[in-house]
Picture 1 (cartoon, rainbow, N blue to C red):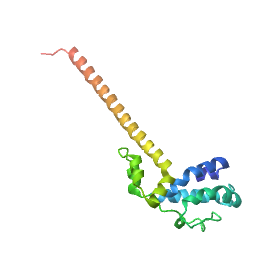
Picture 2: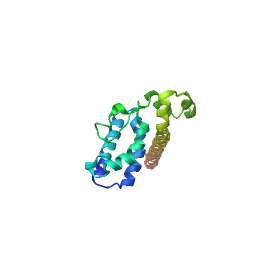
Picture 3: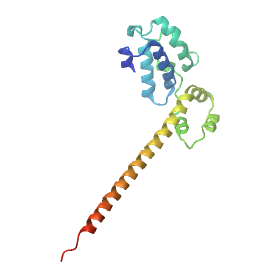
Picture 4: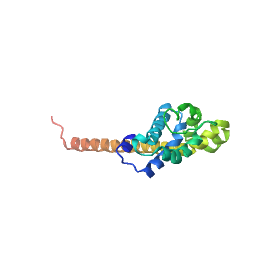
Length: 176
């Protein structure tokens, strides 16, 4: 994404849209995903990259970022020194994350079990969890369907080979 920004292939309005979609990933259980999301935000907010001035970053990006920060913490100038990882809310619990992605689990029942900070984080990540769960189900179904199609094709090919050999062998006359 940063490369697309560097080459100016993303307009400001689209960059804000991408920014909004990436914000929940600041709470993802995976450290690398959180770090890359923060890196993208810092790149976008850096006035040296000529995307947003300090004022634009303060007015357009900062307000959307505030709910992802721990209570009592603020970010003023969107610099690496100011927008530190320590200021972010605790990430979503990995165990809960895995449960939400499991198609066999009841999404609403799991949501009702959450308490405190984990529930707040869940609310911020709910759309990501729903979309990831749907994607995972579609992907697994697609892989299964694809494997099933390959198997049927292989069975058909094998059937054709056997049929051809049977036909060829029936044309051969035993020699004595």
